[in-house]
Image 1 (cartoon, rainbow, N blue to C red):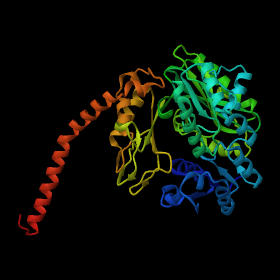
Image 2 (tube, rainbow, N blue to C red):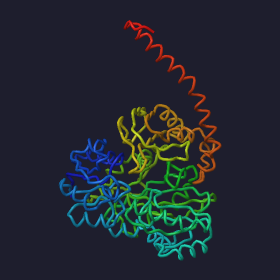
Image 3 (tube, rainbow, N blue to C red):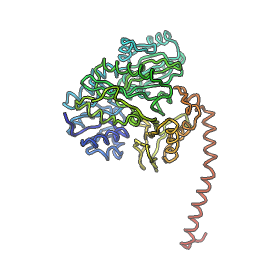
Image 4 (cartoon, rainbow, N blue to C red):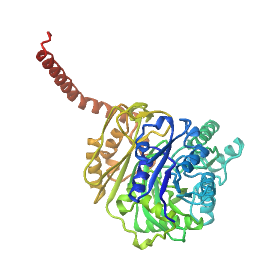
Length: 488
């Protein structure tokens, strides 16, 4: 099988990312877009673009019939789903296959088994892989939710069964919060994935979030590409990712990697995927979930392995063998990724909406910027707030931190608030420098008091430059009026 036309069933920076690799493989590319995205960079860069009817996800990128109809109209012979939206939807994978188009990802059966978080937990327990306490099926009633939470003990996590990315996830510390949190989790899950099923698990206090990238072909070959640390999160969504993890030992890497490989082998998985774990402070690990798709943070693995994961997805989907075994996988140096979100970090990471008026992208050796940003971009509340992913590499972790600091100093986004200042705060943080991380990093290190102090420091530092710039502009304007003969 050899592809000619790849349809990308997604939007924003991930659509651009897939388009790049597709063009490097000689494929034509096609996309569909909402009215809001009609001027987006991914629409301009694809060879063909088809309009969708609505802006809300359920009326656009989650509308299976519209998306598949666009792919058929494009004459696509393969569909890459990106991440989010329909990427872990078994019904979509089946519909694509039925239409005679190759789905670049696992089979509907593998998605149903591993992409459904409750079924994946059941399989992990069957294989003897440690998991947090909780349900292995979706909740069917409020009564079941209450009884389960009481049984495992608070705090608990409510989690969407059909997706990831922190959508449909709620931490609950007290029983009186449970039912209202359950309703919100179900609503988010329905909006993000078209599926409102939710399950409950015991919340592991202050763990590290470690995930393993896997590749698996249709011939039974599976390898892992090492780990990524994703512990710095807000609202259960990752903000900073890196590889390798500072907590990892070769023994622990081998044990966790073997567990990840065993899980996907059992599911007869095909393509790229990620097996996620929680690791306690004493280095005990617990299976969390499988993401049956490409991850947002895949570039850090690409930097340390030298592999193009999207191109590997294409090769696997075309029926090729991996062509390498676990012992052939080498990792070199250290990579860090910062998600640039349209959020006001000084106001509890609330979304920032508006029009981007100016962008300056960072550059230099071993700096990568997977971005959807351009001057004129309208940031709305329809979609996720991710604007860009800034990734750097260096020979060691301390060098990567310094490179990220420099890249963040170069980057400018005007018109909406972003998480760039938060990235700078993290890179300067002593605890981060030591690699002493947990999922509680933000609530412990970026408290309201620290935010206020940091904002004042930055404001005080910037004020003299602002005054000087204002005076310079006024002087320039005054000279201009004088030369034009104006009285002043």
